[in-house]
Length: 80
Image 1 (cartoon, rainbow, N blue to C red):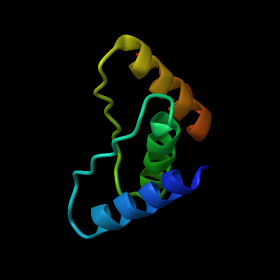
Image 2 (tube, rainbow, N blue to C red):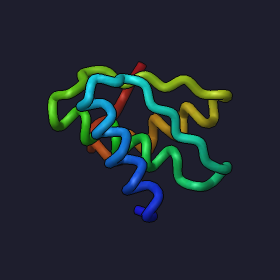
Image 3 (cartoon, one colour):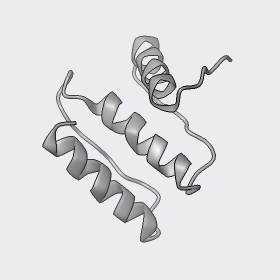
């Protein structure tokens, strides 16, 4: 992970633990938001903080990339 990704994961995790369930990550295309978001989701899932991940994206391609990266992080396939 890049430094900004690690910091973003830590900051969003801390914010979530303090009772704030919304967090916005803004970065340029190709910066690594998908990897960061999937690793954050993995951490929240493994720590039993959440039980569902939803992806809202501007295109089917972005949603598909997130699905693929989340599958890679969790070692599970998402079908349907």
